[in-house]
Image (cartoon, rainbow, N blue to C red; front, side):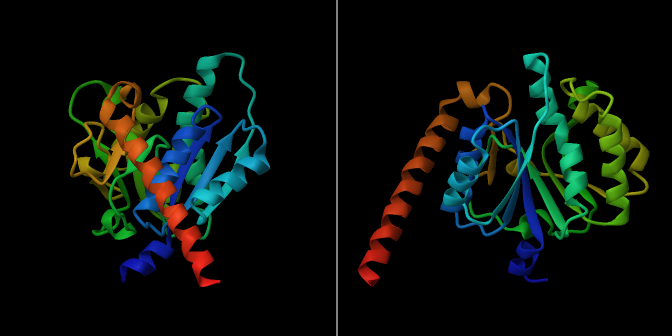
Length: 250
């Protein structure tokens, strides 16, 4: 299958709340700068000025669809855990949509090179996620990037993951704990593949395709900040160039 055909059958999936909108914008700018054509499905949780925000996002990257989800929280930490754990429900929903391939990406990720769907779906598997060694059940997988091929079997997996998380949606790390629990149940039913570190790199290697700003890294590591500033400059430069080009063609 040609790369551009796979791209058309694939969508990124991102979740953001009001606080993380700035990271969502940075992620979309990084896609735009590197001329990535893959659709992005965005779920915005408890967002103010919904129409205005949607229009602003489309101006950054026009191949997007935006949906909204409102939820009441009694404690601040609940929202943080909910937004992380909502990925199971969001992916489950998207597997019933028109796309054949879903790439869930944490919203504080930065794309550093042109990425195509073929980069993720270049071999046969059902679910691709980054596996980690160690005994801590919270860290067996890194759920910041998950690639999924649509099928009845993967839909069953994510429906079950969604149901499991309904009981612990306000618990931090519940997504990774329950995913690994289901992996043990499904490892002989589904084909799982290891997502390489260069597609979910929280060590900020210069050769990686995607940097993951997980945890405090996005606040403490200057490389992440510098990459964000560079993207802001390049995005603005490209926008000015395109505006000048349009004026010159009139």
